[in-house]
Image (cartoon, rainbow, N blue to C red):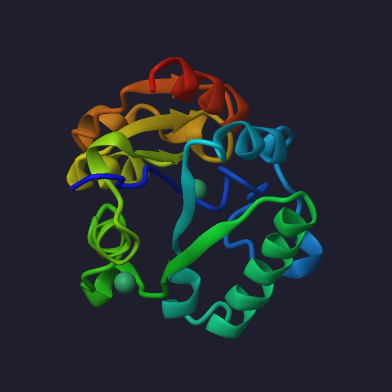
Length: 183
Ligand SMILES: [Mg+2]
Ligand SMILES: [Zn+2]
Protein backbone atom coordinates (compact mmCIF):
# COMPACT_ATOMS: atom_id res chain seq x y z
CA UNK A 1 0.00 0.00 0.00
CA UNK A 2 1.42 3.36 -0.98
CA UNK A 3 1.90 6.26 1.38
CA UNK A 4 1.64 4.34 4.56
CA UNK A 5 2.73 6.37 7.56
CA UNK A 6 5.48 5.48 9.96
CA UNK A 7 4.82 5.61 13.69
CA UNK A 8 6.62 5.77 16.98
CA UNK A 9 4.88 3.88 19.77
CA UNK A 10 5.98 5.65 22.91
CA UNK A 11 5.74 4.30 26.40
CA UNK A 12 4.68 7.02 28.86
CA UNK A 13 6.15 6.61 32.39
CA UNK A 14 9.93 6.58 32.52
CA UNK A 15 10.10 7.31 28.80
CA UNK A 16 8.40 10.70 28.43
CA UNK A 17 7.84 11.66 32.08
CA UNK A 18 9.67 10.95 35.29
CA UNK A 19 8.26 7.93 37.07
CA UNK A 20 8.49 7.19 40.77
CA UNK A 21 6.13 4.23 40.49
CA UNK A 22 2.39 4.55 39.75
CA UNK A 23 2.66 8.15 38.66
CA UNK A 24 -0.82 9.66 38.37
CA UNK A 25 -0.96 12.99 40.22
CA UNK A 26 -0.82 15.93 37.85
CA UNK A 27 1.43 17.66 40.41
CA UNK A 28 4.00 14.92 39.79
CA UNK A 29 4.02 15.44 36.02
CA UNK A 30 7.52 16.26 34.90
CA UNK A 31 8.89 15.60 31.44
CA UNK A 32 12.22 13.85 31.07
CA UNK A 33 14.91 16.20 29.80
CA UNK A 34 15.09 16.17 26.01
CA UNK A 35 11.64 14.66 25.47
CA UNK A 36 10.26 17.69 23.63
CA UNK A 37 13.40 18.03 21.53
CA UNK A 38 13.33 14.32 20.70
CA UNK A 39 9.76 14.45 19.43
CA UNK A 40 10.49 17.61 17.47
CA UNK A 41 13.32 15.78 15.70
CA UNK A 42 11.09 12.85 14.84
CA UNK A 43 7.84 14.52 13.89
CA UNK A 44 8.76 15.26 10.28
CA UNK A 45 8.99 11.56 9.54
CA UNK A 46 6.78 9.90 12.14
CA UNK A 47 3.38 10.11 13.80
CA UNK A 48 3.21 9.45 17.53
CA UNK A 49 1.16 7.16 19.71
CA UNK A 50 1.49 6.62 23.44
CA UNK A 51 0.86 3.08 24.62
CA UNK A 52 0.74 2.84 28.38
CA UNK A 53 0.07 0.10 30.91
CA UNK A 54 -1.75 1.67 33.87
CA UNK A 55 -2.27 -1.32 36.12
CA UNK A 56 -2.69 1.08 39.05
CA UNK A 57 -6.29 1.44 37.85
CA UNK A 58 -6.92 -2.31 37.99
CA UNK A 59 -5.18 -2.48 41.34
CA UNK A 60 -7.45 0.24 42.71
CA UNK A 61 -4.64 2.73 43.38
CA UNK A 62 -6.14 5.46 41.21
CA UNK A 63 -8.91 5.88 38.64
CA UNK A 64 -9.03 6.02 34.86
CA UNK A 65 -10.10 9.65 35.35
CA UNK A 66 -6.77 10.32 37.06
CA UNK A 67 -4.98 8.77 34.09
CA UNK A 68 -6.87 10.99 31.64
CA UNK A 69 -6.13 14.09 33.73
CA UNK A 70 -2.44 13.28 33.77
CA UNK A 71 -2.46 12.53 30.04
CA UNK A 72 -4.23 15.79 29.27
CA UNK A 73 -1.60 17.72 31.15
CA UNK A 74 1.07 16.00 29.08
CA UNK A 75 -0.80 16.57 25.81
CA UNK A 76 -1.19 20.26 26.65
CA UNK A 77 2.54 20.58 27.20
CA UNK A 78 3.25 18.84 23.89
CA UNK A 79 0.69 20.95 22.05
CA UNK A 80 2.29 24.10 23.40
CA UNK A 81 5.48 22.91 21.74
CA UNK A 82 3.84 22.03 18.43
CA UNK A 83 3.87 18.28 19.02
CA UNK A 84 0.89 16.14 18.10
CA UNK A 85 0.11 12.76 19.65
CA UNK A 86 -2.40 10.93 17.46
CA UNK A 87 -3.82 8.80 20.24
CA UNK A 88 -3.08 7.51 23.72
CA UNK A 89 -3.82 3.83 24.20
CA UNK A 90 -4.31 2.88 27.85
CA UNK A 91 -4.43 -0.60 29.34
CA UNK A 92 -6.10 -0.08 32.75
CA UNK A 93 -5.97 -3.75 33.75
CA UNK A 94 -4.01 -5.49 36.47
CA UNK A 95 -1.78 -8.33 35.22
CA UNK A 96 -4.05 -10.97 36.79
CA UNK A 97 -7.03 -9.76 34.77
CA UNK A 98 -5.54 -11.50 31.73
CA UNK A 99 -6.64 -8.80 29.31
CA UNK A 100 -5.68 -8.62 25.64
CA UNK A 101 -4.28 -5.11 25.69
CA UNK A 102 -1.54 -5.07 28.33
CA UNK A 103 1.96 -4.73 26.87
CA UNK A 104 3.74 -6.82 25.61
CA UNK A 105 0.51 -7.38 23.68
CA UNK A 106 0.69 -5.62 20.31
CA UNK A 107 -3.07 -5.18 20.15
CA UNK A 108 -2.99 -1.38 20.36
CA UNK A 109 -0.18 -1.10 17.81
CA UNK A 110 -2.12 -3.28 15.38
CA UNK A 111 -5.28 -1.23 15.94
CA UNK A 112 -3.35 1.98 15.32
CA UNK A 113 -1.84 0.51 12.16
CA UNK A 114 -5.29 -0.24 10.80
CA UNK A 115 -6.90 3.01 11.85
CA UNK A 116 -4.07 5.31 10.75
CA UNK A 117 -2.61 3.36 7.82
CA UNK A 118 0.72 2.70 9.52
CA UNK A 119 3.53 0.55 8.16
CA UNK A 120 4.58 -1.36 11.29
CA UNK A 121 7.82 -2.60 9.70
CA UNK A 122 8.99 0.99 9.37
CA UNK A 123 7.78 1.97 12.83
CA UNK A 124 9.45 1.90 16.22
CA UNK A 125 8.56 1.13 19.83
CA UNK A 126 10.41 2.99 22.59
CA UNK A 127 10.30 2.30 26.31
CA UNK A 128 12.06 1.70 29.60
CA UNK A 129 10.65 -1.78 30.27
CA UNK A 130 11.26 -5.12 28.54
CA UNK A 131 7.52 -5.33 27.81
CA UNK A 132 7.80 -2.19 25.66
CA UNK A 133 10.50 -3.82 23.56
CA UNK A 134 8.57 -7.06 23.44
CA UNK A 135 5.50 -5.20 22.23
CA UNK A 136 7.62 -3.82 19.39
CA UNK A 137 8.89 -7.32 18.62
CA UNK A 138 5.32 -8.65 18.62
CA UNK A 139 4.09 -5.86 16.36
CA UNK A 140 6.95 -6.31 13.87
CA UNK A 141 8.41 -2.87 14.63
CA UNK A 142 11.96 -2.04 15.50
CA UNK A 143 12.49 -1.11 19.13
CA UNK A 144 14.67 0.88 21.49
CA UNK A 145 15.19 0.13 25.15
CA UNK A 146 15.81 3.18 27.35
CA UNK A 147 17.90 3.41 30.48
CA UNK A 148 15.75 6.18 31.97
CA UNK A 149 12.89 5.30 34.33
CA UNK A 150 13.03 1.62 35.22
CA UNK A 151 15.44 0.92 32.39
CA UNK A 152 18.59 0.37 34.45
CA UNK A 153 16.80 -1.85 36.97
CA UNK A 154 15.09 -4.07 34.43
CA UNK A 155 17.80 -4.38 31.81
CA UNK A 156 18.81 -7.84 33.05
CA UNK A 157 15.25 -8.99 32.35
CA UNK A 158 15.49 -8.28 28.62
CA UNK A 159 17.03 -11.69 28.03
CA UNK A 160 14.78 -13.51 30.51
CA UNK A 161 11.73 -12.22 28.70
CA UNK A 162 13.36 -12.73 25.29
CA UNK A 163 12.81 -9.08 24.45
CA UNK A 164 15.14 -8.04 21.65
CA UNK A 165 15.76 -4.32 21.30
CA UNK A 166 17.46 -3.08 18.13
CA UNK A 167 19.20 -0.44 20.23
CA UNK A 168 19.70 0.50 23.87
CA UNK A 169 19.83 4.27 24.47
CA UNK A 170 20.41 6.38 27.53
CA UNK A 171 17.26 8.44 27.01
CA UNK A 172 14.54 9.45 24.57
CA UNK A 173 16.71 12.10 22.93
CA UNK A 174 19.45 9.60 22.11
CA UNK A 175 16.71 7.28 20.84
CA UNK A 176 15.49 9.99 18.44
CA UNK A 177 18.98 10.54 17.07
CA UNK A 178 19.42 6.78 16.68
CA UNK A 179 16.16 6.43 14.76
CA UNK A 180 17.08 9.21 12.34
CA UNK A 181 20.42 7.50 11.66
CA UNK A 182 18.67 4.19 10.98
CA UNK A 183 15.57 5.28 9.13
MG1 LIG B 1 7.70 2.90 31.39
ZN1 LIG C 1 -5.55 -4.38 29.31
